Length: 434
Image (tube, rainbow, N blue to C red; front, side, top):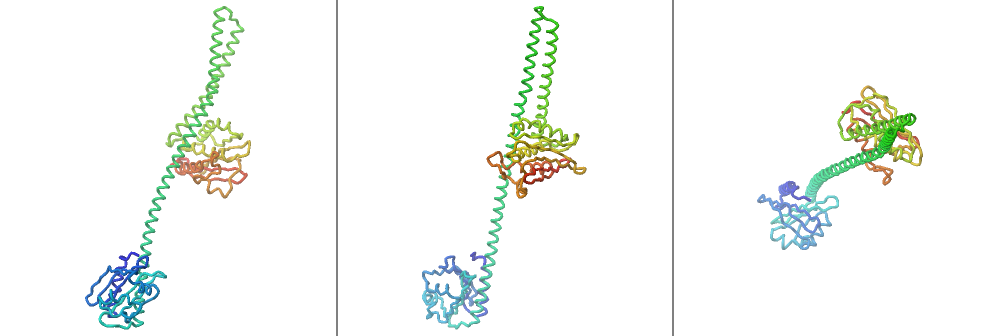
């Protein structure tokens, strides 16, 4: 109980009761939390119009009197010097203050004891009437209600403070989680790029090795031809064989270097786009084919034999962020590789696109895998949700895709899936990103 909050009400009660009933001393007392002390909140003296406060009565000194207060609705001591309920007050309290009659009305709040209203006549005895007890009780009820309202307001203020603190903590934790997610996304993107670079480097070793082998063969044949020419042993047949070998080796070098060049150009475009979030115009089909070309080494080593279908019209242009779109597609493809084909030896991945009016297109990534139960559709885009924890799933791939699509590409993502019927993710994107 915050007593200072009810001080004006207590002063009003003491003054009104003293004036209405002609009582010299009217006071309001409150119990402490242990109910073993009574603290004087306000004492009004009618004759001089003064207020006092601060006195304390201890249960250890007035055990009998406290017992009656704790177990009764009121104590109407017409003769307090002989009344067994108030005899303990005689020497330390009644005589020094000239009190001849006293009425204590207990103030309750439900079953809880709050305090009491005390009325004390001085100089002459008084027999307390039922109407006086009733009036004091009604004012006690008003005091109880006031205390309850003030306590409710205090608790509401505390609750608002706790809610504000909780909201602040939630914001801090949410920011920390968002930072962690962004860090994880950046780490995954860097890891994917690093893995892709490693795979491309491995794949480049074959055509470059073939080109080097062919170049070495050319050099050896040229030296052998030179020795035959110096020794006068060069014949028509040997010369024709040399030209034929030269043509075959040159063709092998050209094909090998062309393959290496194509993969390097695809890697260069993908790396440039991944390192930048700048918007630019690009051909969607070309970007998707470049991405598949870069992923092909990893896909060829996947235990499931995959068939690819790219159904995108040539010349379909986007003014968007190809690097972010590529990252979203990589995550969708990885999601299919991890989840869609468990227990199977073959599967199909299809990437298609079609216009939705004059300003949008729908880019779809579909698999013919095991599908997703309808009950799980609403959860697949939630962070940390994965059915493959510890087995290649982090629960961040699809949330990252959703964040990229909605925040950076200005689109929407939704899925169609059923158990045993495959899964399709639809990316509805503006032709011109915001």
